[in-house]
Amino acid sequence: MNNNSAIREQICLLGASLYERGYTHGSTGNISVQTDEGWIVTPTNACLGRLDPNELSVIRRDGSLLSGPAPTKEVPLHLAMYRSRNNTGAVVHLHSCHSVAVSMLEGVDPESVLPPLTPYLVMKVGKVPLLPYFRPGDLAIADAIEQLNGRYAACLLANHGPVISGVDLESAVYAAEELEENARLYLLLAQRGCRPLNDQQVQELQQHFGSEW
Image 1 (cartoon, rainbow, N blue to C red):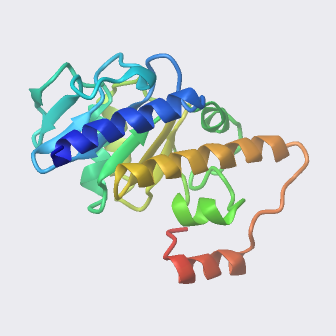
Image 2 (spheres, rainbow, N blue to C red; image 1 turned 45 degrees about the vertical axis):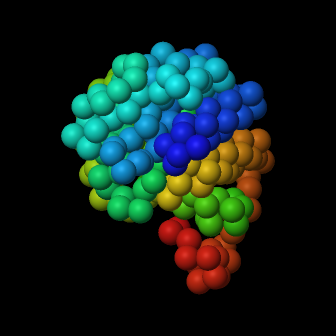
C-alpha cells in the first residue's frame, strides 16, 4: 500500500468513527489531508460514515480538481487553513452539535469562545475564536480564516461548526473531539458557573507541552 492509499484508508476509517459517534451527521462535515501533489479531500454531499477510499477527490496545489468526484464546496476554507498555518497536514470541518450550540450563544468571547476548562483543551486545541456567519461555501469564510494570520489551530464558524487543523489527520481528529467535549462541558455548566484553569495552570501547560493558549 503506497502512502496515498494509506491516507485514503485513514480518511475513511476516521470519518466513519466521527460519524458513528455523532460528531457529524447526514452529508455534513468534510476532511482534507495534504500530500505531495496537493490534497485528498472528501467529495461533495458525501456521508463521512460511508466514504469509499477509491472515491475521494484529489486537489492540485492551485485548488483545481486533479482526479475523483467533485470535492466538498468547503475546499476554500480548508486551503485557507493550510495557507495560514505552515505546519498543517490535515483539516477537519464538522457540524458537531455542542460546538455549533456554543457558536450560537449570546455573549461569548469572539477571541476565545471557551474558557480553559480542561488541560487537554489547552494542550490539543488552544484558543478558539468565533468567526461571523457566512453561507456554506462562501469564499468569505476563507478570507476570514486567513485574517486570523495562523494564530489559531481551530476556529468556530457562527451557526455552522468548527474548523480544526493538525499536523496530521489523527491529530486534527483528536483536537476536533476535544473541542466538542469541552463545548459539551461548557453547556452543561453554563447555568451553574464553572471553574476554569487559572493563569498559572495554563502557563504551566504552555511551558511543558508548548500549548498555543
